[in-house]
Amino acid sequence: MRSMGVAGAGKSRAVKREITVRVDGIPRRLSIDTRMTLLDALRERLGVTSPKKGCDHGQCGACTVLSGGRRVLSCLTLAVTQDGAEVVTAEGLTAEAATPDGRHAGRDLHPVQRAFIDCDALQCGYCTPGQVVSAVGALDEFEKGWPSAVTKGLGAPRLDRAEVAERMSGNLCRCAAYVNIVTAVQQAAGAAAAQRTAETEVAG
Ligand code: FES
Ligand code: FES
Image (tube, rainbow, N blue to C red):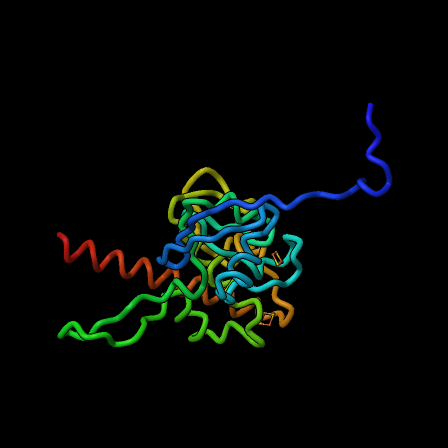
């Protein structure tokens, strides 16, 4: 058996891979070290800086993005696993808005982004992009009827404050804006329900 010797021990060679990932609706092609995280690929290679590096250890939620519609911590996700994926950050939640004559009229905030502003659900704002993306994912999970650790019984969960707090518990806020964050998520859920009711009435 060959010994590695002290000089060779612990050395590892970089392995590169080509990936294509859609980020906020735009296909991006990258050659990356397979050890690179999605967070570093977004921030350092693609200039998408809304996902924040808070802890880099999966504990704060500041780096939350949607991948295939599901919440993921981009600091714990290897970029190479996102080949072919659809990634959405807080920047990508806004929609292009048009005037009645079809001209570009800027961008419309997502209802969750609007609710965070309306409810004053932030202070320094560092955690906010992750909070907003996480809330979008959490509300989708709620709409699908997925239970949380505090859901009572087997019926459809109710989005009371305890439910929101539990579903958002992976996102920390050092400014402790939690009271208004919970209110904002509830407001966004109410706006989404009203929108669905209006669409149903129009369709009917
Ligand atoms: S930076 Fe990813 S969880 Fe904190
Ligand atoms: S608003 Fe400052 S960390 Fe959340």
